[in-house]
Image (cartoon, rainbow, N blue to C red):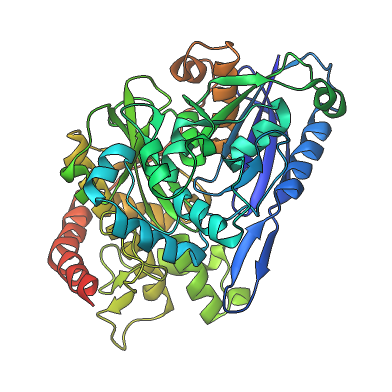
Length: 496
C-alpha cells in the first residue's frame, strides 16, 4: 500500500510517495513559477494550469513502476490564502491564481475593514483582516474583470489540484477560514458577508474537515497518471498545520516550529469561542484536523530572511552557512550586546504590523561580523519568545518544548540561542519533508487507512529527535535583555 503527499508551496511544488509506515520512497519537486505584471497596477500570479501540469507529471513519475491499484490515497496541502476563480461547470480557470503575499489587494482589504466589525469577524473566522485574505482577493478579481466571478467558484491551490483529480469542488476548514468569510463555529460560509460585498453565496465550494475524502480519481486522469479510480483524494489543508501533524504536535502543549525564510509556531488547544483576548494575542486560529481541537498560529516573516539579507550585503559568496556557524561559535556565550529587531518585512504575531521596520540597537566599534550574525539569531529568538508567551497566555498551557524543523536547524548556534532565550527544550524530529508527510497522513485518514491523525502518527516508524537544551545562567541573562531592552524598545518601534 502506498500513499502520496502533495505540497503546493510558494517557491516549490512537491510530491512524494510514502509507505504505510511513513517512509518516503520517492520524491519529486518543481519550481513554482511566478508571473509578474509591472506598471502602476503591478501584481504577481501563478499559472494554475502550469501548476496542475507539474503535479500531474510528478505523480506520473512516482507511479511509473507501481501497480496502478497500489496507491490508496492522495493528500494535498498548500500555501494558505492563495486562490483563483474556476468555472462552476467546466472547472476551467476564470482568473489568475493570486499568491498570498501580493499586496495588490490592499485597497480591497481597506474596504473590508471599513465595512465590517474587526472583533465580530475575528470571532467568526479566527483571523485578522489583511490584504492576504481570500475575500480581498475575490474582490480584487471582481474589480479586475466584472465577468470573472459570474457562475464561478473560489478555490484554494489545494482545492484546485483536488478538483483536477476528482472533478469535485471543495475546501477544507483550515483553508476555508483563510478567506475571512468562513464561520468556524457553524462550519459554514458566511453568506451574509459574501452578499454584503456583492458576491453570490454559491461562490465558495462545499467545506469539509481536513483529511476528509472528497472523491476518487477520475477515470481519464487515473489512466494518465498511473492511478486507480479507487484512489481516494483528500484536502490536507494549510501546509503548516499538516507539517505539525507529521512531527507529532497533536496534543495540547505540543508546539511545531518551522525555521525557514519565515518562522512559524503552530500549537493546539481545546475548541472554544474566540474573543478579544485571542484577537489581542496577534495569533490566528482555526479548526484542527484533530476533532474538538483548534490550532493557533503565529509567524515572523523575516527570520531566516534576516540571515539572507545580511549575507547579501556582506557577500554571500564568502559567507556560507558553515562560515556563519564557525564565526558565531567562537563568540562568548550569552547576549551579544546588540539587540536586533527582525522587521525587514513588517512584524508578525503578537504585534502584527506591515508598517514597522527593523533596527539594530547597541552597536559599538568592538562588534564584528560574528556579533552582527549572532544578534540576528538573538533578535529572531526574542520575537519568537514574544509569540510563545502570547500563546501561553491565550491557550492557558505552559509551552516548555518546541518541535523544530526547517533550514534554520543547520545553524546550531541559532538553536542554542533560541533555547536559552525561551528556556524551552528544542526537539529536532528527523523528518526532511514534514508537509509532504503530513499531507500523505491526512490523505490516508480520508481513505480510511487510519481512523485519525493520532492513529496515523502512531503508525509511523518515527525516530527519536535530537534534543537541544539550555544553560540556566545563560537563560537568566537573555531573559533580562528580553524584558529590559527588547520589549520596551519594541513598543517604541511600533509607535513610529
